[in-house]
Length: 336
Image 1 (spheres, rainbow, N blue to C red):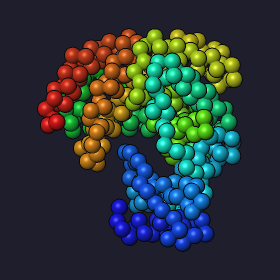
Image 2: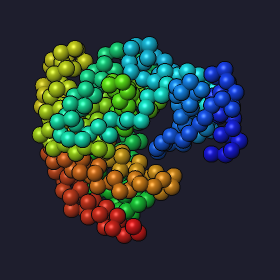
Image 3: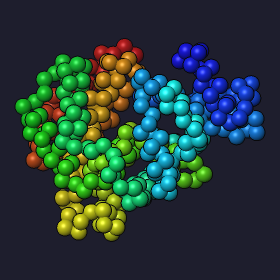
Image 4: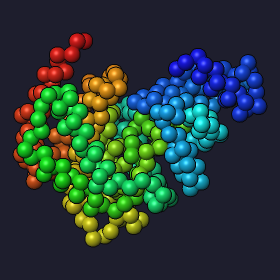
């Protein structure tokens, strides 16, 4: 980030608070896979705000602002947008602190408790705001996401062709997704995007929200970066979600649990394949570090789901006999 942009960002943040640049201090905060950067602004009275720097030529902040205002008006826990300068890509946000949810996964009981709270938050999101104004998570988008796997993980990184069963898997996973009720989907409902603030879970990083499958945010949570649940534990969480969704009308009583569990495993497979592709793209195209080492974790997720999706035994066998050895061999070749 250039010194000119830092200066402009600091001047703008000070002006929004009726202060001069000399009255405030700015410190770096953590960013992740995007071009957005975050800074903590400390005011003279000791209170803090977060300044987001999102270069407009690389990031469109309008969806974040629009969704934040709509969801906050619906009573959902999201950061308040104090001010926005979309032309320059500057946002001034409520400071939610330094505790993403994964920092509290200290033991099994605590982890289970917080995941149950997160399931309730997904229900609130889906019940309080309709999906009508959001982009649709349709066949084309689901397909483009799946295509990231053969393009970036197999071809670009492993130099490996997709198996003959890939086309059938690709089509079946899309059909399972489209068979579900359409709701508001955060799209990255991972623990890292749930901040614990004043003993409440707050959602962040929701600018890519879509109108999509009922189970998607559930899968983002259960098959995310920080936990690996067995298929039995996974089914228990899905059952809690299923009962809530049946009770409040998000899911028809005609959908039995076995059908919904299959849809959830298919959704988990779709997302894990997408993530394998994205992590390779972040490494190869965007020169980001730290993503390849996470591939085995999502490969575990992927194998878990395909062990349940018995109609795709051929692809499940390819995962174990071809993909896993290829990934582990390639990782072992990377200098430490």
